[in-house]
Image 1 (cartoon, rainbow, N blue to C red):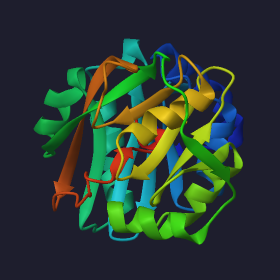
Image 2 (tube, rainbow, N blue to C red):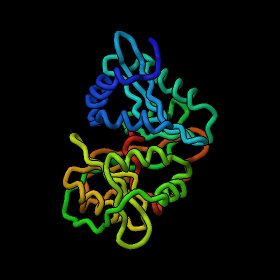
Image 3 (cartoon, one colour):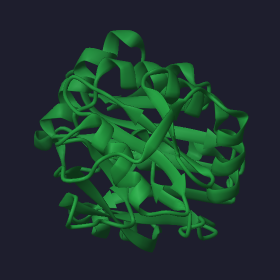
Length: 252
């Protein structure tokens, strides 16, 4: 088996691999990650591409996403090889974090990760009118994001905003990046004191839009599955009083 950097010729295969898992990634998602300057995707090859992993490098903090192995190649060490190579490439970080599905928890625990807290992948049900105001890019987005998450990811946020739009609460401080998609429309990140702001932002994309949130509200959203934030090193310092949703690209 060979592990190498992904290139654009690989994207069609990576999209089909992710969609087989129901993740609904599109070409624009891989292009955003590529253009951000802080993300790399690796692929595992054996009779073609059989797995992948995406790395986000935010300086002292690293994130792992999209660790996925084709079903017929699982349970023979491909996933662990990709994970170990990803950790090696991220280097010495204060924290390396990821979101795990419940099925993958034993795998990550076995490989040294600890649990932080549960989050939820939700779909909007409707029944709420958006109480938000639309606006353009603001430098305050990067400032708030860094204060709440503890790392810099301005280039990625700008690209996410360019692929969708930014909305703000009518009162108080905060923002939400909303991204319409042909397969799935998503909201995130969302930072605000008011937990209802997330669902107001989702209402702009309509029924079926998705978010990864610590605060599922059964009045407005259905829980599709639970995910667990896990980490190596120091525990992530996230201000959950303000973080209402995560950026969808860091899930997987």
